[in-house]
Image (tube, rainbow, N blue to C red):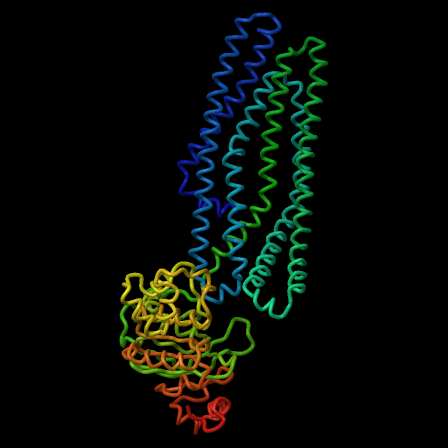
Length: 575
């Protein structure tokens, strides 16, 4: 945790220096008040001197006002520093997460990343707030309080020496039990987020199969686990403060007991006893404030470890040290003996895939479910890196290309189209922020989406998060229009026509022809009718390339393709 604090509090060194100064001044002034109070009692109240009472009382009032001003300023500045720290850590986590490849996202999981960006940052930020507003003054209060207390009476100093170790032992025992509980609590909070996210996203499936009772029990289990862990941690925390107060109150009683005996024998004045008791209370209260922060520390330590895990995780798709920013043959896509496998997997997802696609050429990829079609698309867009072989874009290995150049030259329509909350126009301009309304309507016309967008109310029609206010086919067409807006060198359609009816599919493919005439097109599809007229068809089976050619050639030479055709067109195998 110290490494995280050091790194992200470094820009606020000046503010922290001012903060330490403010806290020190207000602590010193606070320590000066009991000494004045002792003088008021001994020299004013006991002697009946009202002049001393008024003069010293006025001095105490001025000091108290100044001390309050410094304390308020310290709290204000400390809160600002802590909030800025939390903002910077969240920015760093988001910047790192957004650059992760699918491999790192699967490894850390989306629910866990969300928890780390929100709850974990909040825990560390809360600790920083507590330190800035409460703990910085504690060392000055403890050291200064000890000195001032000893000035009042050295003979009672043994009470300070006895109380501090007792507090330390109690806190050490509690901390050793709290840290594992807080670590377990964050893990179980991840589990709750994961289950809840799945259930909300799949609520239609849950209702369709009448699985509400099952999902309720499932959520109840993870919720009960979190509740149990929270209760264990809560009980430990709840027992801490009564214990601390017991030590403080017991120590105060001991001070009064032994101090009264000293007063009775004329070895100590009443003012000195009250001052000593005040200093003693201030010291123990400072320790109690530090204890309060110590209570928060275990959870913050666990959260900081989880934050550092994200910040230390490097993306497997690393940008090149000397990126190529000039394409040798723009628009050309080539795969040379490509193989790909997930880390730790027993078998490769893709093996021995090779083909070349030129501008103006359309390549289709077909195969059974699980044959590696989407993995191939991810390699082209460099969402993953190949295990062996090479993917060449514009004549350059994608691993040597500037990532921004690569992604600006590819128009990807994913298998699961995703729309962001906003409007139709804002979603389309994801493809090209400077596109005007004419460009947007042209893309919508080509994607066969203009009619339903007009029915919704036009380009400024609202789109909810994930596009849940439009149908699956409409989401696909808007996603296609978003890619068309970009006008890239290579279009990649990953099963992007599956939710369309046959007539819309045919019209869309016909309209795409002129729009993509000068670009390379890669189409992953299930329907033979979608790929029958493409320039070449790549057939995958179990991750292996088993055919490459036109529809007619593959029907005669590739049994796998012939079987797919026969399953969809049992009569004559023709579209």
